[in-house]
Amino acid sequence: MTTTVELDTPARRAPRMPEAWLRASLAGVEAALLSWLLVAVPTVAAYVATAAAPLLGEASWMDATVIGTGVWLLGHGAGIDMGEAGVVSLTPLGTSLVSAALLYGGARRARLRSPATAAFALGGFALSVVGLSAVIPGPAGRPTILLGALLIGGFALVLALWRAGTAAPAWWTWLRDRVPDWGRAGLRAAWFALGALLTLALLAVAIALVQGVVTVLELHEALSPGRLGTVVLVLGQLAFVPTLVVWGLAWLAGPGFAVGEGTVFSPTEVVAAPLPAFPVLGVLPGPGQPGLGWVVLAPVVVGAGVGLWLHRRRFQEVWWQAALSGLVQAATVGLCAALLTLAASGGLGPGRLATVGAAPPAVAGALVWQTGLGAVVVLLALHPQVHALLVRGYRAARARLQNDDGDAGEKPTSPSGPSGSPE
Image (cartoon, rainbow, N blue to C red; front, side, top):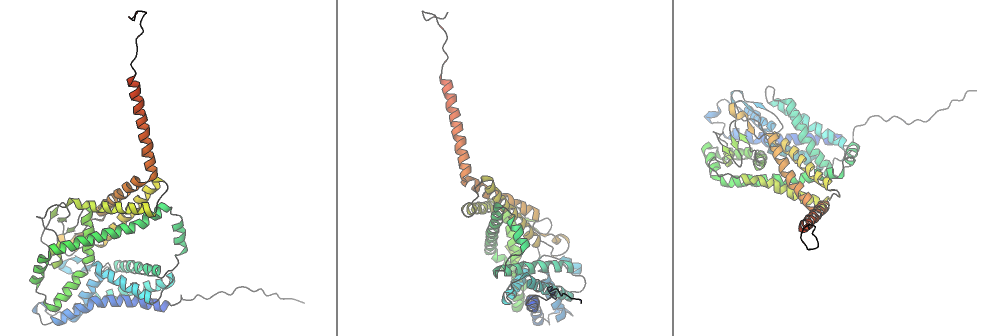
């Protein structure tokens, strides 16, 4: 008699799509389409309002759509070849922020709570951006567009998952736990420093706008854009305001920026040249304005404030660990500033206009030593171990000086005979 024994084995689960994957994909596609429409629709509307203008020639509404799509793609890392007009690659960071905000809002509405579903939203967004780039004839830098879409979408979705309280992945937790406390403190302080620096840069741009408002209005009137054209022109320039803020950060750091090869706009030197007829460029400082070299102290003050925050909120028991937290903060700020400066650089046309923006290494290096100096000096000046070392050194030096004075006050006596005269 043969007995057959059946062993219960766990059934293999068939691969399943993550929950709400379709909703996540639609959220990504929706964000891309909405951000595209916000740029393309005003462009087509401006064409319709001025269709009878002789300057337009045989241009059609499709040509207007191509122009609007090109401007939108600039915000996602594209470089648009304008033929004899050169290559335009300066990124309107306002368009990038709008796309990120729309994707963030879509992810929040879709209630995405896992990295798997967020990956579908990112895929839908990136593929939609690349698909819409087909409106532009010829190669429009599609690998760069894909990379830009992934960076913008990844930033928005990571922020959405963090706001939703999603648990960090295991690899991230493993990596974070192996970073010492002074390293984590420095990384967190870097965000405060970067936020403060960008706020100061925004304030600098606002002051420059107030000072140059007359020039801006004169340039605007010279273009005679009309009512609808004025709306489109203002919206287009608003898209470049975050780019101007990054230029303001480079100006505060000291190296400054360029709007064309051979030009320099920095606190200590202004070398200008003929510029494109964009009214917003009227905010740039003129050659006759006084030097403002003292503004480079602003990042040092920001670093000192961050050092005070580190001392009070993330105190390190050992003095050199406190100093290292300040250095980590400075290095992180420098890295982020270099990435922002790179994103806010590009070209506006042929010839010397192919060089527009700031040099990332120069801006990063300046902010590293400025914020690092302020933070490290404050951290060391307030640390108890440094105080104890200084007190100990002072006491040792004082005791040595007292001993030297005592030895100098004792006069040597010469031997003498019974009558007191020397023998």
